[in-house]
Amino acid sequence: MTNSSPDLLAARDVAKRYGPVVALRSVDLTVRPGEIHALLGANGAGKSTLVKILSAVISADSGSVLVHGEGAHLRKPSDAMNAGIATVFQDPALIPDLTLTQNLRISHLSEDDVLPWLERMNLGEIDFGLQVSDVPLAVLRLLDLARALAHDPQLLMLDEITAALTTDQASYVFEVMREWKSRGRSVLFISHRLGEVLELCDYATILRNGTNVADFDLTDVDEAQLVTAMLGDELGEQAVAVSDTTEESAAPRPTHAPDQPVVLELKDVSLRDKVKNVSFTLHRGEILGLTALEGQGQNGLFQVLSGDHRPSSGELIVDGRQLNARSPYDAIRKGVALVPAERQNALLPQRSVRENLSLPQYNRIARWFTLARDETQRVDGAVDRLDIDIRAGSQVQRLSGGNQQKVTIGRWLASGFNTLLCFDPTRGIDIQTKAQIYELLKQLAKDGSSIVLYTSELREIPLVCDRVLVMYSGRIVHEQDAASATEEGLLSAAHGLEGASA
Image (cartoon, rainbow, N blue to C red; front, side, top):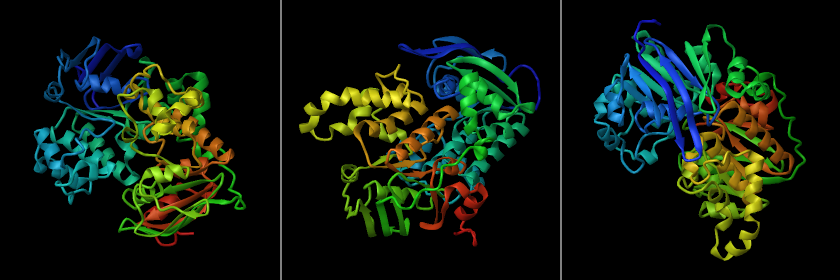
């Protein structure tokens, strides 16, 4: 790292508001050449808003941005690109109905421009003719990174890119970050995985409620200090128990009592070549964990469980009766509800928080008038229980990622369910919100609900789950009590190594 002057990028007194919601009050940020700089804060602190301003996706209400010491007039994304700034945003910046090739052309790139980077990420065999909607999220994240790298930027901004990646895939991102630093260029890195931050980054700027609260040289800082700075003293002390360094010492859930009735059972369920003869049971009041590396059948399994796809063979039994779901609506009628990984797909972004929370209650027009009587009470109860920030309630797209995720869970609290299917529900959200979701899931199980929880965060499993299953190549290859699960053992099973299965 070098301290050469002028600074690569400097943002001064940047502010942004959306109606009554102040996204940024007054933010300063300095990124020097040859450093990896972390931008940290809880959900809603203003990180993604600042990144969008620096990328010229949105404009600031006030403040200034300097690049190499000179005022930068960033009016549109191409201005930021011409200034040497390339961004991988929190959500894929791709048009779902177009192919990968067509999306590249919109970015003035060709397949040859990104292929060298994709080959380094073990994606050299990617089919560019696929529609974006048919490509796994993790692949899209790495493709976004390859697009950014193809522009050869001076500053690479990465907003929660590793949240959707497995350990193996994240290692490719880390290699790029270190390479960019070695070239004398810089990386602005946003991650809620503080272990990554401390391992990779040189400096950190902490935002809270839209303003700077701390700057750290990360040479001699631990996660507890970062969490306290992000959340404040009182909340920081509460949340640090679920930070990366303390998760292993936190009390796990007691092992599930097997005498509770079975509420969901799979018998030799297959889905084409994605899911292969999967069998397991889920008991009342149980949180059943599931983990796997990317593309090992977990998506297909959740599609079957949620009624989105009918199995090719086998049986899905809910409360003792076979479920032949033709759509998710059939599963929901039986009390099986899905919280998907892609919250954008589950929300009506331009509708209000209240409309999004109450949506499942209005599945039949004939019920509208009777439901309207208690809708307010149900919705208010979900807002209070999940502590959803509804200041920007007129449009759910204005909420932070963590609050959007709370809305996807809260709609089922408002409408009711028996079994909740949660696909990576804490992906890309801060420690405090993670802790809230952990406690909610455990309380729901205590109250008699049942939960299937897929997670890419292996350390969540002993904190939240009773049992854990591991998938590899479409099959369940490992099962054990979650309290005794270790990250090393689960990773071994997830890689299909011999001797890992129970």
